[in-house]
Length: 500
Image (cartoon, rainbow, N blue to C red; front, side, top):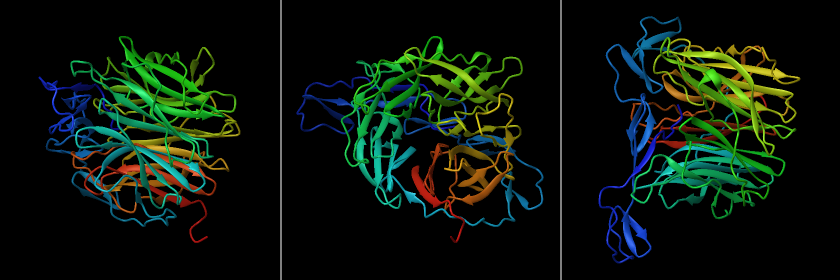
């Protein structure tokens, strides 16, 4: 569901390598390369079912649906014919018409990236008290870059401090991690083209670092061997003074999890090591949300595993997390597999599993999506006093007549499981929040968004969200299209009850 650039190919038009010309004067669509101008490669993508090509990228959603169906969450679903009390039928969907907004403690939504910029894939970290650092993918006129914006007033305003561009012109999919004392690392993916101007999704992972809460940044450090076939996004994690980067590369046998680590604030990285993680009958692991470090040095990595059901058709999936021992010979075991998820044909979810745990693994919670009927539904599971029990069952979270997407979770100091998700119960998409209880009920529901946004099959709607709880404040980030183009928004809200 996230806006991932599957099957990226970088194509340069025939004859793009030109004879040397005045290097101070390059024509439209070209860039300087030493003493000559060369054409900027154009990003071309073969898009999977349920996505469409826009501005060189595969974006969620389709542009038209057949009679008797309507567009919802980037797919065509069958129109409803009858609705429950308190809802009404509108454009094939049951829309809640009798509702009362719960009181909200969330502050005004703040645009993170510059005005008129098209940006998405926003990730953030609290670099130090009052200092927020956000990284995001950003569309330029003829290329893609990664922007880094910083807030020094606890998220009330943001200023872009850094724009990361690479020789291939395609820098995307940032990851971020911080130590809370002003040191921040940002990773990003570069997709490259070969000498003929064509590529097949190969690329490099790069890292930049800051030691002053995002005010200044190091030069990019290449963290992987050039030319690997990479997944879209790496995940960063920190355990003490050691930083870890996890990603997937591809070969003829499928996806292979890779691990690298740094003990010098990202200046150098160990050679990538394969992390044995056999999904078995689950098909292929898909990672999306950050790994969680434990006190014993292990990492918990949430996954959604996907396999095609050859017998019955459609997709089968599991949700859970791996326990990764990052010792010199890494090993990963399936620490928890919550349930089998069955999707009808075409309903394939992408990394919609989120996990939070404290370092001692005494408090933890996980949420994931299922599609038991026509709508996507959130399931959750909470553990207190120790890790999840092997047979612990998740609960369907009752969120009334709506579709839920893009969950993220974070633990409060008291071990409470805080949750955000995208919800369309009122027709447009909004970010909501709540506290997940062990019995699966959701307390303290609040609307984070101060304006809904809508999909029309053409706008970039990514379901990547983020949530952190630091002290007595919650921080949230999400992508929406309220301004008619993709952008990244941020908000914060206290944990105290309204009015206190």
